[in-house]
Structure formats: structure tokens, C-alpha cells
Image (tube, rainbow, N blue to C red; front, side, top):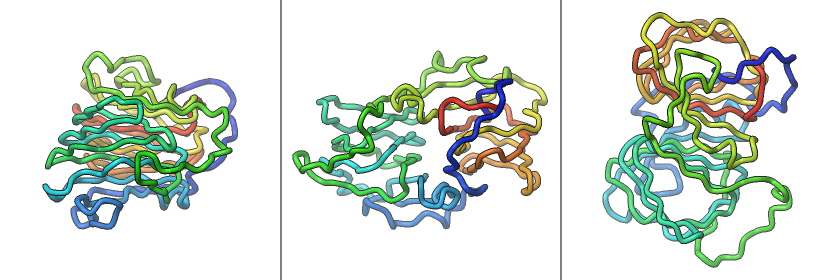
Amino acid sequence: MNAESTAPPTERPRIAQSFDYTPLRESDFAQKGLRAFMQYRDLGLRRATGGLMRAEHIRVVAETGMKTGWHCHDLDFQFVYVLKGHVRFVTEDGETVTLRAGDCAHLPALYRHDEIEFAPDFEVVEITAPAEVRTIPGRDAPLPRRSDAQGRVSRFAASYDRPEAYKVGDGPRQFLAYRDTAVTEATGRRVNVNVVRNSKAGDKSTGWHYHTLACQFVFVLKGWSRVEVEGQGEFTIHAGDAMTLPHRLKHDVTGFSADFTVLELNIPADYET
């Protein structure tokens, strides 16, 4: 759904090995994650990437004990997008950050933070690489050396849901508006995350196409779209549904609701369509 070019396609490392479609089902939520006061719903990215990445829909289910204490995560990538409510946390840089519905953030590896407040209706989409993440508690705990990260751009960045952040023409589809979440710059262009929404009435289609991406993951925030995927047929994705597209998988988005809005992650940020 992004970054069209007439340049010849480029081969990419294949992070996503298979297609995955995960619809929203209430029965998929379970208290099986890091925090006892939260429920977690897997969004299929772990399956599609063979454990190289993970995406979960997480929500608060208790009103007591909702603090994490100081900690950090030993990982390559972490991104959070707030669906409902709010979260307030303190960073190792001394900043107090509040993310509300529509806001999001990229947290670099081993970035110490303390989540001090959750709204009782808090819900978030969290995406990490790899799927299995080691959490290190404590503000002053010794941190492991990450030799693979030397020279790699990775910094904290927050993006807030403001009307002026959506730009028509910042992507390949003139009927869609794109909001950059600052992840591209924060990761040195290794990862791109946009919020994309319908901006014009009328029938629309992307036409058949594929991307030279290593992985594309989408999570529908509002509305619906009709999608036809090579080898999978045509189906409709609704709010709360998630889909992962591997390298060069042909697809056509044949229709959109007027309020269609989607969270879209692309690896890498630069690719051809």
C-alpha cells in the first residue's frame, strides 16, 4: 500500500515467510503475557515471520497493580500504538510522556522506562523484533552489550494524532492521507510506520501490485477494506483485523469504507512497488 516507483525491483531479506490474516475475535484475548493486569491477543506476525517479529493487541483488565516499575527490553525493535485510553511513563532521559488514543512511540533497545499510569480502558498494539523479548527490571541493572547495534540509528520518538499530521500525496495513492510516525528517522530507515486513512469519497482500487518489502504488516483501526490476495481469494478486513504480506505477494485492495484507517508497518522504509 505504499511507496510506488518505476525502478527495477530489489531483492530483500525475507522477514515474512508467509501470508497471515488474523480477524478480531474476543476469544483470542488471554492473560498470558508479561503483565498480570493485561490480556494479550496475537496478531499473526509471529506465525508469518517464524518468530522474527511479534504483534499483539494488549488491553488492561484490572484496576489495581497497574504499574511496571523501571525496566527495559533487550530487542531490536519496539513500537506501540495506543488504541484506547492513555498510558503515562517516565523515560531514562527524565521526560514524562503521555500517549493517548492515536498516539504512538518507538522505543530503542535497552531504553529504560517506567509506566506509571494506565487508563482502565487502555488498549495498545505493540510490535517487536524479535518475537521473544527479554525484559530487564530495575533502573540501575547492568545492561548487556549489543555488538550488533554499533553504528545503528535507534532513538526514542513519539508521534501524536493531530489533523495536520495527515498529508495527501505523501504516499502513492492520491485518495489516501498518510501520517508519518517518525519511526523511519528513528530507525535509520530500517522500518517505516504510517497511519493511512481514506481522504476522498467514491470507488477506489489500488490495482494488482506487489512490494519488494521484506515484510508488510497492517492493522485496521477503523472501517473496512476489500482485499484480494494471490492464492487467498477476496475477503474484507475490518477494524481490529490484522494482515501480514510477505515479499512480492501480489494483491489488490478493491474497496474502502469512507472512514477506513489502517496502521501500516513496512520493512525497510525504502522499497519499490
